[in-house]
Image (cartoon, rainbow, N blue to C red; front, side):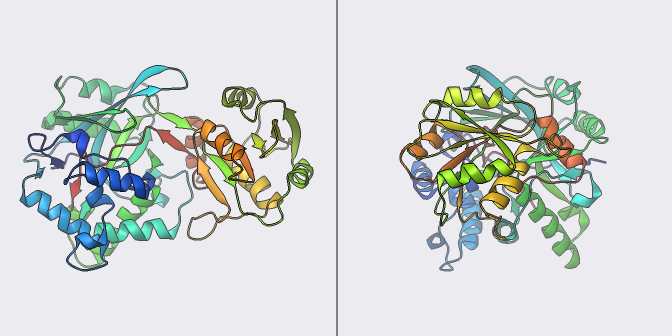
Length: 423
C-alpha cells in the first residue's frame, strides 16, 4: 500500500526572493563552474545548501555543517518559511520537447510518503546503486535533518484521477520560477483536508516506480532505521519526500544516456569491430558519424532487439551493432545488454564499487557526443536508444535493476522548491 500524506513544507518566501534566482538543478548534475555561477546569482541560492563550500561553516572542512548553518540562517532571516498547515504540493514543469518541437507540461504532486524497503515492493527501483553517493546524502540528511529534494517516481494511472482532482484547486500558483534550461516550475499548495484524503485513497493501491533519486530514497530509509534505533518516534521519521507523476503523463520524457570510452589500454577500432561480432551483427551506416539526426534515425529504425551505434575518431561512418538473436535478447533492457555483452565481455569494463566508471563517461546530448569523438576526446562512443516507460516498469516489477545511468528524464526536477523537515 502506497501511503502518502500532506506535510508542512519548508519553502522560499516569494515576497523575499525571486524564485528563478534561487532554485537549482539537482546537486549531482552541477559541476564546479555552474556551482560558482549559481552561488554568485544570489546570496540565498539553494546551491549554498545542497552543494555547500566547507568554508561557509564555522567548523573548517565540514561541508555538511555548512549546509545546516546556511539553512538555519535562511530560516532565521525569513528567507525560508515553514507552512502553517499540512499540504500536498501540486507541481507542474512546462518545457520544450526539442526532439518533437512542442511545449509539454509534466504534472504531478509532491507528498510525504511512508518509507519502506525495496523488498516490500511498494516502492520499486530500476537502477543499480552504489555506496559513495548514499554516504554523501546520508551525512547531509543527518546534519540538516531536512529532506532537501524529492525522489522522482511514477505510478500507473491511465485515468489520471489524481490530476483531475487537483485541477479544481486554484489558478494562480503559489510559487513560480524558471531554471536555466528554460523550464518553468509552478507549485500550488493543496491544504483542503478532504482533497488530501481523497488523493491518499486514490494512490493507496498503487506502486511507486522510482525514476530518479534511487540513492536519496535508500538514504531516507537508512536514516529512518537509524533514528528508530535511537528511539525517535515513528510519526517523525517514517516519511520521505516524493514527487509522483502518472505513467501516462506526456511529460515523462526519457533521453538516451550514451557511453564514451576513454583511456582504455590497448583499445583499437578494428580489433573492437572484429571482437564485437561474437555478439552482434555489425553494419556500417555511411556518413552518419557527424550527423546526429541521421544517426538517431538509423538507431530508431533498427530491428527489434538491442541495437547500438559505435562511432570512432577519424571515421566518417557510424557502425550499427545489433545483438544476435536468442531468448534473452528481447527481454533484457538494451542498456543491460550493452554492459553485459560489450562493455564487460568485449572491452573488459566493469562497474566499480564506488559507482564511478574508470573508462566511462556519460552524455545524453547526441550532438555533444559526436563533437567529443570529432575532437578525439574519447576512443569510442556507444550510442543507445532510451528505454521505454513500460520497460522500466517491467524491470522493476521483476525485481531486476538496470546499470547506473540507464535513464535520463528531461527536465530534471528543480531543487529548492519544497523541503520536508524531520520533526
